[in-house]
Length: 193
Image 1: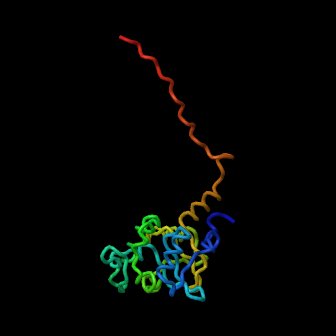
Image 2: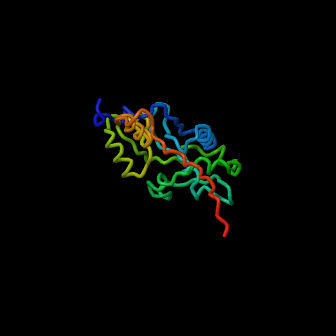
Image 3: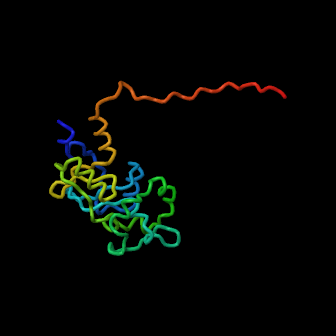
């Protein structure tokens, strides 16, 4: 199969870690930490894609009160404009070191459905790789979900595309070229005046 005939289904990862809408925020944070990910799709029992929850969604300013991440309902109209939260996703390491600051109310009461972003960027399984790249570039995202009739089928990340391009490129040599390490210079004795 030629490179231009490949589509999203050919390069997507099918083993996507997903959350349920009735998972607690505490459970979502545990999943993020265990899997070392910064977000996950939210699906119902039939696999229908309902939204996405990211660390950026959890750590939005309106969730903080007195230096703690606390329980406060929000309306999605009052949140950041669509796309802003996708541009500056947080590194999991930046969040989990303050995990003890999450309030008990947050950890045991709020659900993923309360804080997820319901607008999800997805492509069809038969979308060309070029179309997937165009969606990522236009939406300023590094991954896009693959959905068929609203059901989650997989995810394509920018790294998946890079891996695909690398595999389909002609090899230059049997092994990657490495620059030689600089050789240490011998000390040159100085002449005394």
